[in-house]
Image 1: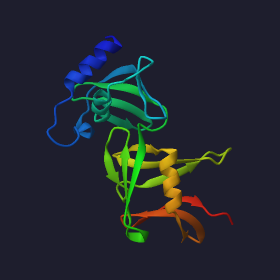
Image 2: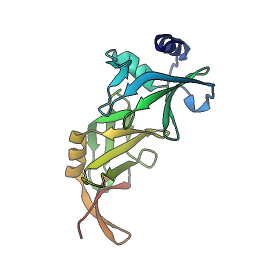
Image 3: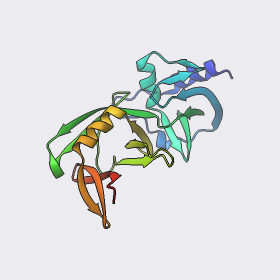
Length: 188
């Protein structure tokens, strides 16, 4: 089956959902192989090397993505195809702050217009490149799918950061929904 046929078949198999996301976590179809679809680090979706310019199509595909281990798939009730994700399948592009201090709420919007609040179910985490020490911040969107936090949004988080001691070590971090999310250790 060609990649073009695979994409057309996938689109036809996505159940229309009046409300909410399709239950991809419940679907276990046979693996049908990989297709030439890639999500770049900046959140751009590519098909056969060409950016997918139709935002509604990208948004639709984003509802049927699932991560199993380190691999990403587009899943329908009858088909499972592998795709490539350079870093994270989403990018958090907008941050809205409600309140302040320990009671503040951080609301993110990602590149496909999903909105979610940083909380226990949607934690923020930051990794650091071992050689450059450059941070790579993420927030959990759903299940085990994360959004890379865009650099401008991360700068907003840094502006909101406060110090807190965790297990005897000083950290800079942010509060949201009563949870503290460390974003950088303080130098000793």
